[in-house]
Amino acid sequence: MKKLLFSALLVLGVMNVEAQDTTYAVDSNISVVQAPVVKYSSYAADTKRPSPYTTSFKKDGWAIIGLLGLNAGGLYLVQKKKDLTMDQLATKTRDNVPFFDRGNVGYFDESIDKDSYIPFYASFAWPMAMILVDGDQTRNFGQVLTLYLETMAVTGAMFTITAGAINRSRPLVYGSQTPIGRRLSKNSQRSFYAGHTAATAASSFFTAKVFADMNPDSKLKPVIWTIAAALPAIVGYQRWKSGQHFLSDNILGYGLGAATGILIPHWHKTRKSDKLTIMPEAGPRYQGVAMVYKF
Image (cartoon, rainbow, N blue to C red; front, side):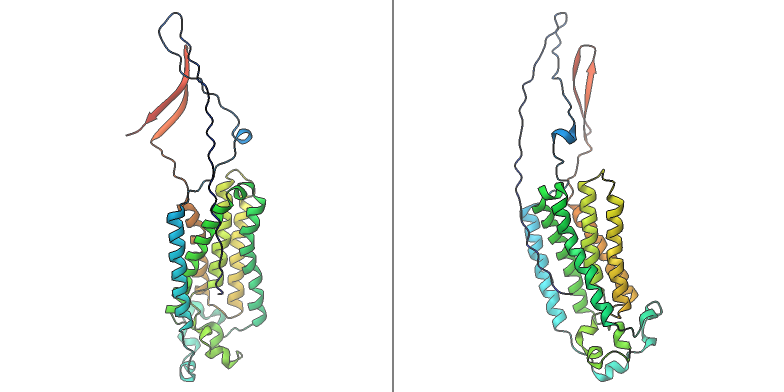
């Protein structure tokens, strides 16, 4: 999997605080001061939906730098892998593959391999397109890009380190129809796990998660989640059919990518305190707000 670099733009939001005059009225019969009258207006009409996320330049910036360093280390391990020898190739038989991964032993199809890059690259274009068409994401594009970069950096670090540290031959290595150079190549010895599937899942599920968080009432959420689930499934099938990865490689890649795409934005969500409750309160001679704090 080729290393993709993304540039994150951080935007500082300016908070507008609106001061309102408060009028107090004293009842002529009793010495009770009337509390401020709280006026409620239409949220959608009068305000813009705030970002559901909290990001920190200090924390997220250093996290991304560290993750990019891990990516570099993983790529170094991948580059240090060695080609198979002819003696090692002779041991690559179907019987040495776990029974649940024998469905595509020996598969090799370069055209399907090339086709797998179509949904793969589409998954990276999708979040960028959503930023342009979704007003809430457009207003918070720096924050969304930061979270996206962090998500893909985590995905890349997990994949490159694993692929570099673990030697597992691709299914195509086991087939006599595969050119001998491909079978012996060190690139064919990193089947575990499916990096294309993982990256597609991370990008797709990230897009769906952010859209759902920023548009909680949208009727398009089921459609977005369906697309998010379908894209990596298509890539995974194509990587399996082309002999690039075994079934277990794709399942693990799908799961790790989806988990990363969902959890990184989720862990950045703004936490609302459930200890403080604020509600309107009214009586025969007063109107105001009641506040209850649970210790």
